[in-house]
Length: 328
Ligand code: NDP
Image 1 (cartoon, rainbow, N blue to C red):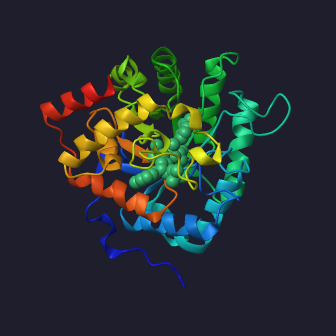
Image 2 (spheres, rainbow, N blue to C red):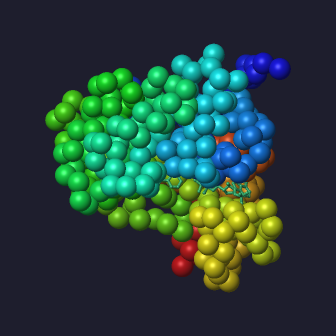
């Protein structure tokens, strides 16, 4: 059956302006790092993506290496574009990235022009798209001149492979330099994609101030700390969880101390009439620099739960203080 998106899809989602640019992103975006690879059930990913779009999530975030196997999330997303989303392409913001290891040899990772342009072409081919909306340098390369990496992003935009340029996991100083170079090239840096959640607050030490000054948007990844900031691990490690799969979430990182903190946070969320996942998403969005909270989901219910977080985004001073105390 052809997919027909819900008529109500723009009724309740919030759309926040990305820095000083012309576009807005949904307050909640969906990332395809996990659960969309060729090891996963295609139909599950398809149901998640459809539901996300039905709920007003217009932004889907990918990278060359998402899977596993690397590249397979983009291939599966390409299939979703062909089967379901093709008529709605102009309602969507699709991003991809290059920076991590993608193919063997000296040209398969980091930040050279050779790698970024070739990887972007491969991503477009896998997704069956003429261009993406945002193309990111996935990580800062200490050995390639930043002029070359930013020059490659500028070229990728000017040659029509992407509409906007972004950077991910650059520190404040690297961000300021990248922003200056891109501005001089005439392709402003649209957005930065750093990690941010209650357990990982590194961006508060300078990056958010830089982004505000440079008028760059901010989409934060892993707002749920890969599932830790939900009720999932309160009573051990469930079999079907990311931690049990020994992929990116090390089960040893789920210590007794962490779980005790999660229990306290869970109580605070309950008092707000929210789930912990919802409070965790809302907490990232309370930071005025954050444009969008970029979630992952292994089930449709995860997307629905995250979107329902928008029903209560405000925090009282005492709630914020209780969260700080729980995190001590
Ligand atoms: P989250 O912190 O949102 O973690 C998502 C995972 O948490 C889900 O896959 C699921 O795991 C679990 N979960 C989600 N909702 C719930 C819920 N309501 N109840 C219980 N468990 C839940 O984000 P990710 O770490 O997945 O990252 C999101 C996106 O950010 C990625 O897809 C990618 O696009 C981007 N990213 C970018 C990086 C970069 O370097 N730029 C690095 C990492 C991510 P489970 O499988 O256990 O059910």
